[in-house]
Image (cartoon, rainbow, N blue to C red; front, side, top):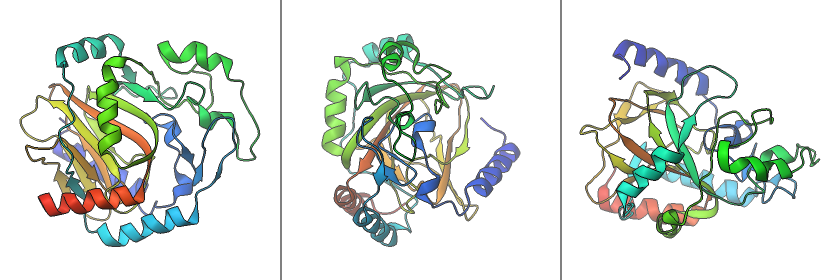
Length: 298
């Protein structure tokens, strides 16, 4: 666990870095541990062979409307039945064998997670944001991706590969993926990642969505910690909250726009499911409304 004085310094530094950064043009999830995605810099990309195009004004308008409705909420347990892995021993066997350290390819910073992607929209789109520049020009050939993606992630010399990545496809995860598709408010799925903290996870903001209401989702697949370890901290204030979940759900949402987040590490195993997707605004609204009705606002 990070000592309290050091943690406060890290929180202050992270908040200063991300203050007033609500501009979607600043985001690029493909250059984080989240992996390849279906948008970049306020643009959508449907496939690696089709140039980017601006986000639809109606899409932005819908989410700005939801900001006004839910901006007072930092985090919320979600009314989703527990997402679980039936054969957990086999999962541990697979994870211990296949997961890699997720760390920067540009610095010597130690890894905070081990993990692996269990789903990717397609092999060819594994670096879909690295294929086209902003002018719509093709910048790479695809064949090397097919050769390299199963084992070690992308080649280190590929532009945009800021973090080590690995995809492991196995039918063992089919039921879990099906349950995610049935319960998460997904419009278009980019990828699914399972991570295990191996050190204190320093406070950060994800490079996904910075809407000022809960649109960042996590499922806690397993956690040996008795006390909560996942925290959020409001960027504009000193208000820090640890995520507390009721017994009947292991999924929650938090506001990535108004908070940084981190995880305290006590050398006990925990596994988080992270879904990278374009959200359906109507499904998001329905899910948040029924979750508020069931659990209230914490």
